[in-house]
Amino acid sequence: MRQIVLLMLGMLVPVLQAEDWPQYRGPRRDDVSRETGLLASWPPNGPPLVWTFKQLGLGYSGIAVVGERLYSIGARGEAEFVIALNLKSVQDGAPQEAWATNVGPLFDFKGNNWSAGPSSTPTIDGELLYALGGKGDLVCVQTSDGRERWRKNLPTELEAQVNPIGGGPKGLGWGFTWSPMIDGEQLVCVPGGPKGTVAALHKATGEVLWRSTEVTDQAAYTSPLLAEFGGVRQYVVLTNQGVIGVAAKDGTVLWNYRRKPPFGTEVVNSPIIHNDFVFVTVGAGQGCELLKVSRKGDAFAVESVYANKNMANHHGNVARVGEHIFGFSEGRGFVCQTLATGEIAWMERSKIRPCSLTVAEGRIYAFSEDNGTVVLLETSTTGWAQAGSFRLPHLATSRKPSGRLWTPPVVSHGRLYLRDQELLFCFDVKTP
Image (tube, rainbow, N blue to C red; front, side, top):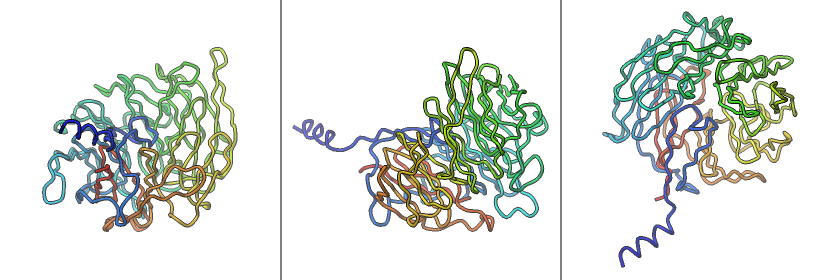
């Protein structure tokens, strides 16, 4: 009888299907989790706070979660560290730090009122972790104990450069912020500069395997993406000058879309790839564009489907759910945009300020950059459908005066993670 009752309960209660979040933007680099068994709505005060970690350091680095470990990068004093937390060991309301490994010197400069420290997200690949510091120090360490396997200083060893438009030192800008990507034995990077925009290193040794020497754009603040167009495996990268696709096997440039004029501000959002299309959006009035990539024989062609200002997203991010793009657009508010046409399906100006977001089980977790407000939304294509909201219990005091809350939220293993500089909050969002 007891077995029958338990079986019936199992049929009624949603089962949590957990998913790791091992890199920037999640397993598929699209800000969409396949996690299930999450709360469909929140109580008036929001989901329960599980713990708060207060020593993550300065920076906007994102969160990676694999099993019972959480990883991020933060500046402590004059150095940046990749930090591992043990999620199984929570004492006095905070998880225990498993280890911390020095990545490189603190990113900052005189007159910088916006950001200090790292902004890249660690990448986990089995027993190894890859972390990028704000000044271009790339390290490979063991996930078990943080022991260093190899390191490279990209500016000195690869002549790496960041486009400084919008502020920051020459060749460095607001620092190196892209997140490394693993594809087979290759560690895919975006050093930028005269030796080639894209590079592949051997993930076990750091040896340079190839550079995309045909394109020498300086790096923007976007990360590489994996795609397959016309049956050819390739990496897609967005820069201030446009979008490029390079062959995964050797870095040969397959297609190269030069934007006229180039983007005249910081390029932060990585593209969204869907079927044969590449969607990009940039803030400060730049807008969005949809490109179509096609193969004709051995050659590739790229054309612009539309370009408008319906979605102009700067420091946050946007995500695709089905045939629509969701995100905050400067001057318009929160927008649901039809991907194929670029038309606005709906927009809401007053419910939330500029925000970053993630998507899990068909719902949007929007995180306001201004005051730490978090909103749960249905991915409706007809209008704003709110299912809960709350505000962080307190905010960081170490943030630069012009800085905001720009680290995107993460949902993994039934937990919602929100970062504000040295503060990391963990909330329980799974169904009881």
